[in-house]
Image (tube, rainbow, N blue to C red):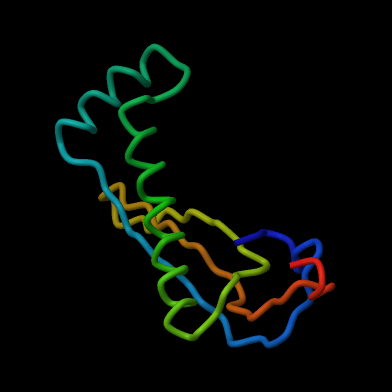
Length: 111
């Protein structure tokens, strides 16, 4: 998986399609309470850090699973985004979107 449109040393053999992994997340009451105290002091809100990291990787893994199901051996152009869904519930959507592709080494003799 790369964020670039190509993988160095490999050529694009086939584009299989767009894949996306989505993960909506919210923090429970206790987490929001702790975050409220941390936000008063300023700086990083550590109550959310590990949850956001888990959600980001979950979105990536869901996109990866979809790419594998299409027969891909790589994802290029991976784009990671977060969105606040609003709704006054503190729901954040994590998305990982890219192109599922088949790649092969540029020089097959080097494999």
